[in-house]
Length: 127
Image 1 (tube, rainbow, N blue to C red):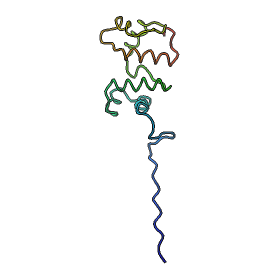
Image 2 (cartoon, one colour; image 1 turned 90 degrees about the vertical axis):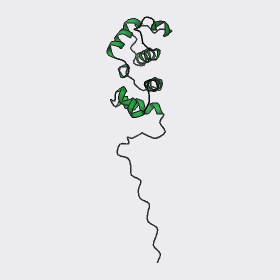
Image 3 (tube, rainbow, N blue to C red; image 1 turned 45 degrees about the vertical axis):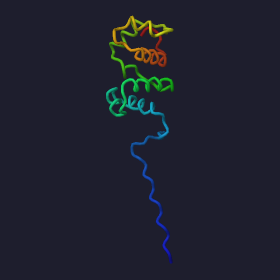
């Protein structure tokens, strides 16, 4: 009597795979996920092999997707305090004029991130 072919081996489930994760997530999700899990900017740059500008772009996209982003992932406490003082509680209509009032070397994207984080967290009052 011929033997039946062997049953296929079960596919192992990766131990580090979390429920709801799938391979189809956008690239910025994985960058956001590293920050959300406590990795620093330098860690994220090394792990993802991306430069700061692209990591920052991923953070901005994460905010647009509704995921919580903390400005301190990119900005020092001193930068955040300076931005808050110069910008004030109101939402500016334009960012470029603010750059002249901020310390030399302040980047447009850093101010954009600060404002988007503040807006997404509902912190438009002077704090």
